[in-house]
Length: 306
Length: 155
Ligand SMILES: Cc1cc2nc3c(=O)[nH]c(=O)nc-3n(C[C@H](O)[C@H](O)[C@H](O)COP(=O)(O)OP(=O)(O)OC[C@H]3O[C@@H](n4cnc5c(N)ncnc54)[C@H](O)[C@@H]3O)c2cc1C
Ligand code: SF4
Image (cartoon, rainbow over all chains, first blue to last red; front, side, top):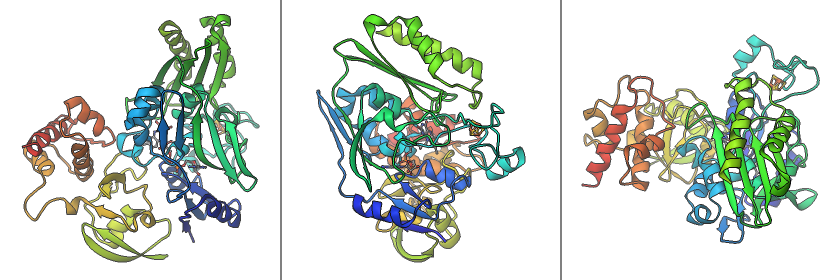
């Protein structure tokens, strides 16, 4: 028996979550969650729809800073003239997610917390039953690496690397109260518990970007120009003090950030750090060797563009 | 199960639906509105697109309960009697369909798209319809039909 709740305040949503321990899911736009439910990768009985919450904000962006409600849609982000003018990096990253119609439903918060992907896991139940389920489900080995203790499913959010490069913080609510944490800190380098650094009932309500960068760069690698999840997303900014923040996603269990003064960086050191910190395995539609090589190509492109 | 009141194509409908049921399932299985197609059923092909308060949404991902209090328009609700909507008319005239399975989704995506973008280029239309997969036409005729529909709507 399923239950569908539409709370109107964050407090009510948190109290519903505590009524259904381990058996609920928050629902932003549902464009990620519904796929997981259809493929029987999630079987929670309660859905807590967050779209009616009336204590959240919308979009505020000017030449200094940006504030976004977690429930604004990606379409609202890409079409906001304030974001296009002052934070084009985010507008471009959001525009690279899924398709125009999906972006009208998909939310900012949902994109930051999109579930990790792996070609051997994100399949129909029949497919998984035929091939054998892996560590992340009920099996006991990783079908990609043969390992018994680690899952390498990929974080595929395109807006996360952009917002991490922009030094964003997120406002989180849970039974423990309200917290503000740097966006990169919510991700764990673990393909099964990829948001392990968040309280289980955490609701992301807001995203804040403190300053505007001096320059930015963004590129997403995927099979088609639309629809497909990322095979590699790179977002980079340089601030007025010359600090570069380069964030890679789609190539590891969590976004990988390299933050360093440009004075101390060479393109070789950025590539070396990226290749070392990305735990890239063969779990995407694009071949592993190619994806690894593209890390070098993109970082070189960014370096030359500065 | 929940008893909900929906507004579909301007008609109020009271239906008993599953709490996690999608509007695609409700339209097809409970209201016999089978114009909206179930194809990939996982957000990838666009065949199940319907309008919710004028905004295109994928029927296969949208819980029915979420549609309460909203105006739903399906492919059955876009023509007035025998007078086809310009998008429908141009698809017919330009041969923008073969098996026809993706067509309802194309129409329900193109109508709100042309409202927001009344004067699109061919490249704009390609991007706007990039979530609608067609396995027959090779897209050229669909894109041309939507371009012609834009011109017709602009009078
Ligand atoms: C065909 C297709 C293509 C896609 N392509 C891409 C792509 O290119 N890039 C990409 O990143 N994604 C892609 N997606 C996945 C998805 O559409 C996006 O990630 C989308 O932004 C998710 O947002 P949502 O609001 O729909 O999330 P939901 O499905 O509602 O939620 C996603 C997760 O976040 C949790 N959640 C949602 N909101 C909150 C909140 N405010 N606080 C706490 N938890 C929350 C949910 O419980 C769930 O676990 C694609 C999906 C489809 C169907
Ligand atoms: S990386 Fe391995 S354990 Fe993780 S989802 Fe893929 S096959 Fe399963």
